[in-house]
Every structure is written in structure tokens, then in C-alpha cells.
Image (cartoon, rainbow, N blue to C red; front, side, top):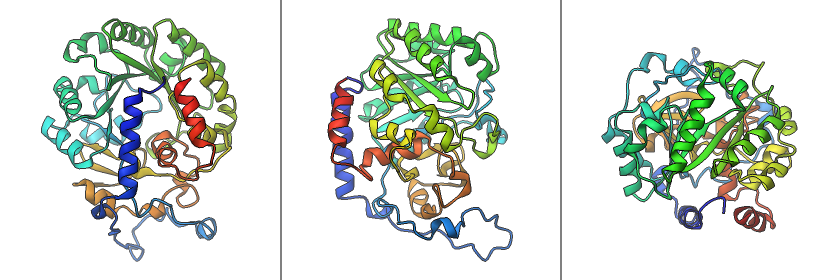
Length: 370
């Protein structure tokens, strides 16, 4: 199975419960109207595109699905496409306390926590943090460049709810170009092998760029099969403001072309992107952005509106949910969202069953069991 049955059941029960009775305190819309502010940079008004748009079907039933926890933004690499070390340059030496991290996990309540950064294995209390999140009954994906896995393994215990998600954007030559340092691919593979030998679950995490050859991604997945990697996450690159270089990032048309044969890859390898999200990537289905499904917490607070765009930081999760003008974002509303098809905005839409078809449950079951 691509995802453990227990995790599927837990996530399904959580979604059903919250769709039936979403927390009312998260549904208030308290965003300030600053349209009269002459110094405001107007980026959310595209009247012609928004004229016929329907409200987001979950706009008044908001709840999170996956929490993105960034305990620090420091990293040992300067990857070409990473905006964190650039966007948060002024606070790159700061980090959350263990207590702040756990308070945010409890405040949000999402069943899955993605620990990212920065490089989370540089966080001094990463072991105790992961253990405490697991004790709360949560699932964890620890997103890492893989270079410190072997050194840090002793701080963790294998658990079905815990996954090392290792960043690999291609085979050795192209991955090392993307992360701007030779030798990183080999060190990451050594980390993968060490984690698997110690009994841990391991995913690969791949970003697809304009110059990515999808045949190389298939080669990568085939190469990783010898190490019994448990799954592969994959998503298109998005040119957000901190690193917006149109030479490497994709338009929606580019994404459709890159992912047109993703089904063939998914049949051969354990890609963990849902079939509904993959249809969206191929251009076969429309999904709205559900950014509140993947909220981000870091040293500045709750990041709004999403993992990739920063218009504000909030002290509390409730403020993020109620003071973010959600209706102003997404393709057709904000030009910065026009080409975004990243999983953190659209996998929640698939999970919530938005724009669902009669055949979706059967597709999902077949995908899960394959």
C-alpha cells in the first residue's frame, strides 16, 4: 500500500468530522478592508477574471489538514529554487523553541505535520520535537536534504507514523547543480541507505522545473527502488516572489505537458500524490486552491496566506484563519497565483473532495492498494 491503512482511516475520520462540524471560531472573516490605503500594493484585484467565479466551496468550513512546521530557516545549502534563506534572511539565525513548536502543533490540530525549514536536522531539539509530536498521535514527514540523516539517526526511533522525506531533484549531476554543491546527491543517498537499514520509512521529494527531463525522474525512481524507498512525492516548481526566475519555473501549460504521462510513472513506482491531484496536474480536472489546508508556522508566526506567498504573519492560528482574506487568492484572483499548481494548495482540495466525481473513490482505492 502507498499509505498505511491506519493513516488513511485516521485522515478520513478527521476530514469527515471537521466537514460535518468545523470549528466556528475559524470561520469568521475579520480581514481588514485596506482598499482605501494609497500605499497598498494592489495585487488581488482582477475583476474580469473574478466576475463569474463561485465562492470556494469550503470558504466557511475551513480546517487544516497538514501543518508545515519550520523550526528554523538556517540551512547548509543554497538551493537555486529555495526562497526561505532569501525571504527570511534577517531571521535566518533565529529558531523556535521546542515549546513554541508544540504549542503551534496543538493549536492547529492537523493530523499530519511536515517538519521543514531550512534544514530541520540542524534544529538542536529535532529528536525530542519529533517524539513529542508522535506522542500526540500525529503523523510526521521530516523534509530534509538528507546530508545529516546518518549523523542524526540516533535521535529518532522508527515508527510507522514517521517518514524521512529526502529532497532529490534528479540524478547526481542535475541534483547537485540544483542545490549548488557537488557531492550532495551521494551524501543524500548514504542517508537514505542508513535510514532504511535502521528500519525507517523513507520518501523521496522531487520538484519538477522547466528544464527537468521526466525520463530522468523515472531513472531516479528506478535507481531508488534498489534501496526500497517507500514512496515518492513530486510537484511542479512555483516561481514565488523570493526566487521568481521565469527561466526555471513553470506555467500551467508547462505543468500539463510535464505531467501528461504521470500515470505511467505512478503504475511503476509508489508515487504518493493522489490520483485526483495528478489529474489536476495533467489539466484534466479543475481544483480551487485550499491554502488553509496546509498552514505554515515559523519564527515570525503563522504565515499568510500560504507556504509560498507571504502577505502577513499572525500570532495565533485563529488569526491566520480569520484575518486572511482567502477569497482574494488563487488562480483568477491574484496574479501571483496564476501558475501555481503546488501540492500544498491543491492536495487539500483533492482530499476534501472538492469537485469530486462518482468514480473518485474507486480511483483512490485502486491507487491506494496498487
